[in-house]
Image (tube, rainbow, N blue to C red; front, top):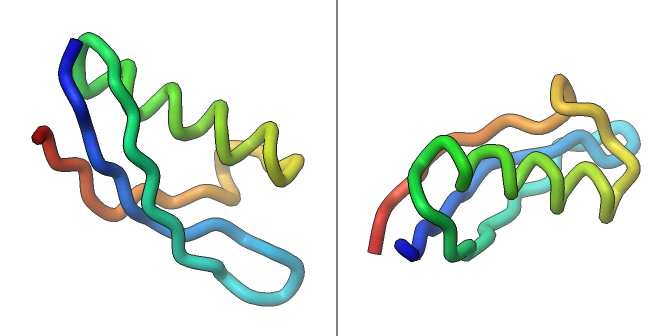
Length: 58
């Protein structure tokens, strides 16, 4: 498993909120999917309201 740090923004009402998530997954594609899943379920958002700005492997 590899550790990834992903930062971006998501739509919270009328404003865009910044976030940073750390996930442990097999590859970068899975890291993207995991963050979409986490942010989407925590805030009830669809993927088009979540923007990933940077993905770094640690």
